[in-house]
Length: 518
Ligand SMILES: [Zn+2]
Image (cartoon, rainbow, N blue to C red; front, top):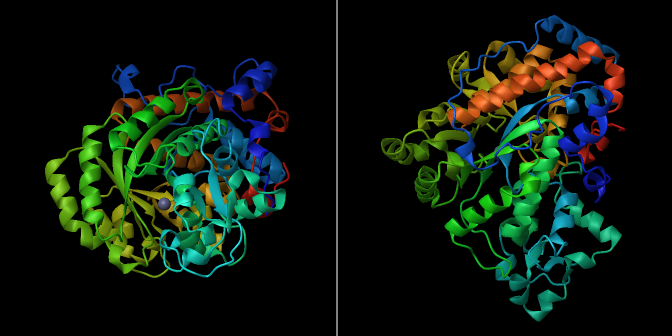
């Protein structure tokens, strides 16, 4: 996989920019109306009017036109044309997305080495291994003390012995070849890397970068711009509550880190994206203190409902310490205390049959992350048809972590066409070097999604998100409007003309796996 450090910065694909400088000048009406200047990002106070219930209906008076056109495009368009069409299409929200896993490798390098944006910090990375001795700070997890490219902040680096220090150098001093290796080390871009590489090494390599409040907030705003450019209007992000560190490498109290997040997301560049953000707390399911984490999350979410909306549990399911039934008591305890906090939990991210999805529904979850092995739990599958449950589908994640190595065999189309509600998401797209459009493109190419199915999937991301009802109503209303404008353009102008001008961006996965040449 080729990694281009400057790719997304060269393109700077803000949807607003697309609208202002490009397509709006070509057509009478804007392609999409999504780039609202005043959309609040984290402040809910502007949503003062109660929303009318929005029903999902085809967005145009004559929906057959866009449905028929979409069939034509699927048959006649080149892969790049189809990709550009899907890139431009309004897509709803990404509601299964891990904060630290969402940033592209080139973004990490760029922000981590930019002292103007990283809080003036210097990061050090292990560029060589000259000692096999184990250092306590580098022994997390397991044998990972030997691996390359773990990145530390200055405080951690200073605590290393002189012998270890010689293996590290400033992240900003990496030469071109080293930069490529560093970026490659946080992406699943080689055959056989799969889930062990992902769960045990990729995250650990990011080291102290994963806790830097400066790096994370700056990266997140960059991500808002990129998602906005793809027509994603809502991000419901899984993130930790605590353990964020300041520029000195010191842990920040929860109230302060929350305030910093709010402040950063209230800045103009974040607001201009038109993307609304809500948080889910995520507990590590196999941790020995997972129950305590859940209690703390509930308490915090309950007290900060303006931005925190739900709880999740993540972590590899083949680690038996995190089985869902373990959490029955603590979720019952929380449900006795707190109303209206969304529960979405990873379950069924496995090849072999088990009862984890049923057990997870018993905890109170209305949304299941992945749900791959739902297909082998037929009673639960039937229970989830035409119901208030949603499966958050993550196609590229499932492929690269080898839960469904052949995507043609993914259960998604069976769920969708049997009436189990689904939406598409990116999970840890940074580590796949992919984007939201890749997920949609894969779904269309592999499973021949119809226009109605595509829109239903996008609609579900809003219908089942944990945002407050008023915001939900706004999101649905805007989505419907965006779709109407999108469809109107295609009813008035030749589709080839429109897509030829879409400045779509794809990344490593799009180039090397999807073979896209944009
Ligand atoms: Zn996930």
